[in-house]
Length: 455
Image 1 (cartoon, rainbow, N blue to C red):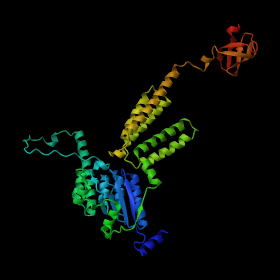
Image 2: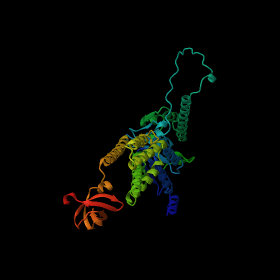
Image 3: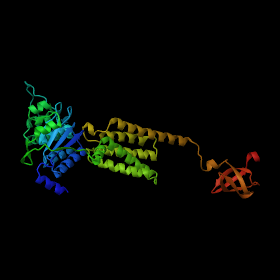
Image 4: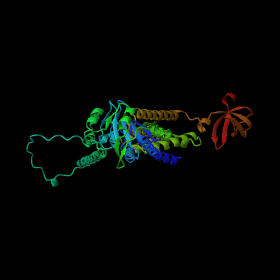
């Protein structure tokens, strides 16, 4: 069927041409990247004439952004990125994607820029250098470098500065290459990275950063119809007169978008761990183990696609182990409190990103930490109450307890105690049904004597 569709498209040019509209909203991450790449592939298979990315994003992850850009630059179908509606933005990673597209368009009242590396998940860029003084004072002759002791802190500062420069230079080179790919203003693109510069739509058009401004989608399609762009190294005329097809994420991408939310992945991980712990503590229940296993696998799948700090993850695991140790062998709060502290610190460090959309909410961390602390405080109080409670089993409980004669005596006989028949011994003559008092126990034989009231 797919081959027949392609043959018809070749025989009757434009007969089945479609314009696909793909929405990209919110923080750019694995779900958005997978959705866009899949739509570009399907658009090529369906012989669509144009793909319009309708974008509104504050930025996102560097790896997801580069995956999306590779999909756009390698697409056999021309791609127009349209920042829409009014009030939307193409910040940070969105600026890269906008410049990489064959057509860059914006709606009035939108903006782009602020593409510094810190906003796309890279190390923060170095701060601005202080200007040199206009009239520098003569300086004393510095000591030879060989006479100065090497400082470990100085080495770390140099290494950090080098890493920041590498990240900054890489981001600048990348955005310049994308801007030059379609003849856009590469100098301003560099400022968007090095100076975190931003522009409204009108100024972006004047400076040659974008191609056009359109108030709505029909106007955009009318303006770019017949426009020539470079598509895989060849000149291609855009046909935007086809039928509009609105594309929406399917259930898989919606699920991926939900579980790759750091807060959701965090909760799934905790539900999975505690579910498995409960299953091991009470084997045979089944439901906690099944639910915990599913949640833990979903959390692992989500976390492996996000910028994870393994030191934070290790602290969380250590905290959980300490809390389990406190529950199984109480240490008067030492392990429990230490585990809660390690767990809370690890939770704040878990996401290795400065993006607001990829941070675990502090109220969620506090709520779970305080709940854990409350649970272990309750366990500790129950343990202390149990230690103060008098013994209810064993020889201490038997001594002085009343029993009833069944038969025998003097000598060996049987008595009823606690609903059970026990072997007993007494030197006294006792009759059936008489109440006696347990004196002691030797093995499984009780020593009894006449009850004081019946003596």
